[in-house]
Length: 308
Image (cartoon, rainbow, N blue to C red; front, side, top):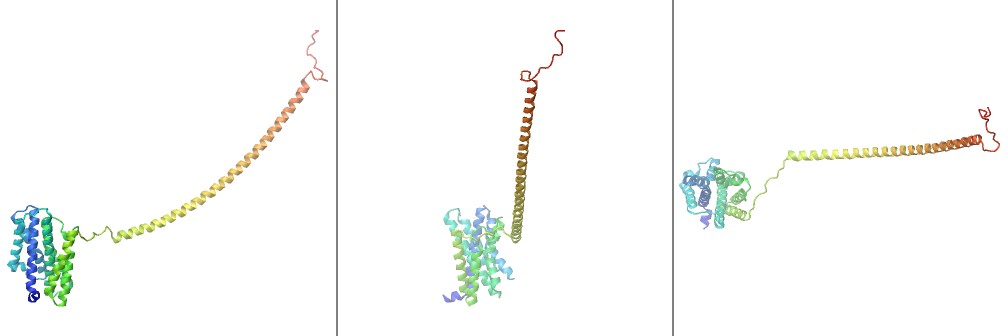
């Protein structure tokens, strides 16, 4: 058992081929959903099963192992045959089954991608990068071939994050000196994160509609708005004080006008009373002079003598 755990090449081959078969089956399932023919099944299954490993080897400047080891091509075709023989529908059992296959594929390829990068003499950063690339590369090729947004871009359950965690575990254990155990631990870590994410719908939050320039513009508008509000408040206060002064002046002038009007009215009333008294006196004197019946008054002589 210890010899098996320490045999890095054997563990690498088993885990890598397990990922190829699982990815081939998952690609064939997508081909069945789109009602592709046999060629469509093979292209989509082989592209999904071998795409991530080919990208990894090309980035390491190595000949892709899928082209030199016939077991990889046979593994991808075996996955396609499995997807063709099993009628996958919307039943819960099939959804869970292929979710498990996808989780196993991500865990396996994250571990093998990081291990092969470290074996090539590269550091931790490249190991993490190529571990994730190996895990998600086949899925990206599959999604692009069927014309849909790759799952790794978001809007789905955790996909690249479990691969990153698995690659991280591989690098840690590999640094201790146990690369074989590191691949097993990394694979289990990726599976342990990917499965609950699918079951419970875990996903990363989407980025908000925010940017530095828009935040600065909003802050500038707010500062200008505060200044303008203070300016408006000051202007309103000045206008209110001016209106109050005008109201006081108007009230004072109104009071002066009312006082003057009252004085003029009193004067006019006094003059009217005086005039009325003068008229009454003049009228009384005239009556005394013109009334012939009054005592001591001599009537005027007639103009013509009636005897004539």
